[in-house]
Amino acid sequence: MNYHWLDCSDCRCHVAINWTVTADRLSGSVRRWAPDRSINDGKAFSLPRGEDSGAPAAGVVVACVCGAPIPLPARPDAVGGERTDDLRVTLTSGD
Image (cartoon, rainbow, N blue to C red; front, side, top):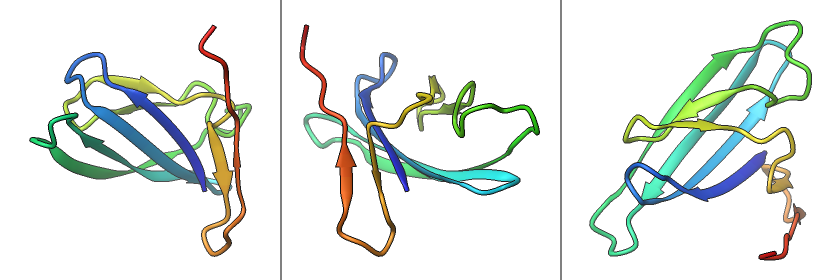
């Protein structure tokens, strides 16, 4: 499972995206919540993968629940097994 976290520039909500990649599909979900907790919803997505898609999520854009486009990073913020406790997180400085 791959993970990406960000704040949506349109609805100003916190957004968590998780996805898995198979030979023919990229499937996952988008979950958003407002800082004041007035919004807490999500939706699933399933997208076909092209043969020349490069990195698993390179060039893929999903939509926030509000409809704003969110490009997935070529390298996720974290990677973990669905049934394991191992979670690799990439930390970046605020610089």
